[in-house]
Length: 133
Image: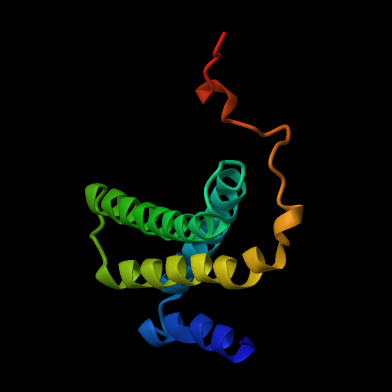
């Protein structure tokens, strides 16, 4: 597993070894999708969803968020005198994929199901509950 992670982390160097910008895109999207996947997983486990559904949906949302933020950054560049760089988007997509898959394969299984909190101070769902009085 460690060899696979090291290989995946070296992919952006193959995109463009001279351009540090690609590595920055890769690293930023990895962190964004890693964090988003973890936060969505923690929030979704507080619902009545199956734990497997929580894992898959949080991984997809984390990946999508990373790709969306990378795309918006490229659009910002093209609207402000730069250009939309397809190679930057490749680094964004690879980084977002790695971040969400790392959270899915390494961090989420490390949390035992009985230790996943169902309620705590960060509960955002009480507004959705209806009173049946």
